[in-house]
Image 1 (cartoon, rainbow, N blue to C red):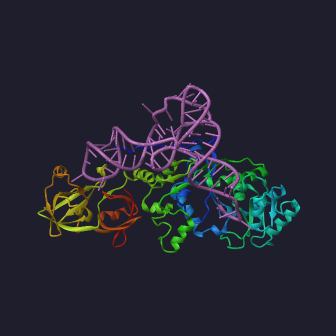
Image 2 (image 1 turned 60 degrees about the horizontal axis):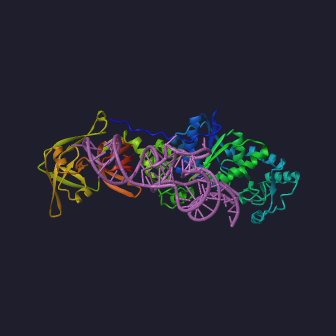
Length: 482
RNA sequence: GCUGCUAUAGUGUAGUCCGGCCAAUCAUUUCGGCCUUUCACGCCGAAGACUGGGGUUCGAAUCCCCAUAGCAGCACCA
């Protein structure tokens, strides 16, 4: 038996990593993790494991509009599934006092000011590289306004704190970006606040305070990196090493959390683990191993090129993991019951795994009638071999298939180029629904499948499947891949 | 519109910094063949790419310029 070869893909070296690294995975708790999150999560994890150091999970829940109570739990579950080595967990909602303190200090240092302009108005001024009326105010006046913000004397949208950059910066995205805002609705599930830090501020403060040395994230953050640099500079902090990987498109699945939620609410999807979604729990339900996801992500790497995620590559990784482990069983889709003429009773013994006979066999007693895949008969083969049983000749008599025993010799079947197909005894087959992304397939499977609840098996000639539920009157299995 | 990033086979990736050993790596994919009581696994073989155009150079996937394409940002989201 041969070991599947493992190709170890090495990620590019990170500079300033000699004495270990501190990295973080910083999801927004708006839903469960999906393939897009997995890339950030696994890449950072891989580097921490490689160089040693600390991996921080930072829950970025500074926008109450995008916080889902359930997600706090789901994110942690998904991270455990992925096998990340998290050393420390930080909730940003626990750190608002910290942000206020540094917010005040930034104002004192002249690095920020309170802006009471109308949003629309500010945007226009910004396009024209013009200062808004709030910008020239003194530090003292700003501090006073800041205290009023914290005291709740402004309504939503009436005041914000902006970081002072260059108004004539060629990139409009850099000009005096916001650091705090006021929000009355909705209430945050974990804290009582009306002044909320914006991502660029809380991230900069936390990256510094937590000692983050390297940040790997998508290139949609490249402007944020530049913005955060202003904050680092005002405080005199040294910046981490940044890497921005390119956009990752994934064919065929919705990755947007809000779209998924909408689909769930409308009933289009069964839940977050609906197999048509790109969530990690959907992959898990289908029988994709976390290690396969990790491998696939590392294989993709941290390149800045936009890429399209390939299911084929993920499946190949998964097959490598699952094939040596999965027991083999027969699943007969769209079964047709046919008696076999002139056949001796016989008990078939089929290996649980062809490359590992020691694992034992499944026992399938033939008592006269078998269930066969309708599709195979419709191909009108002159002869077929029932795998691990015997050969049968196929003919038709007025729309009816007639199968006649044609000997035990495998070599005969080979000579006749007869297909070797899966079958089940009519009297000991379990109803089984194989659920695929394209739709459900009704069929029957071996009784032994019941022992495999939760495991991935291979339905011979059909593909891998995860046995999801064996408790009801029929087995429910989810198709993994071929 | 402004700002920035990227561009190697169907897909992902190595090589690009420090030009020659690159008629370009590895994996996946597809197609042949072998093995095999699965259309799995394994083995052997094949197919398939440097976005385009100029320039520098004895020599360019690698350096320079232009073009084209894709992507990202310009939110009181992350």
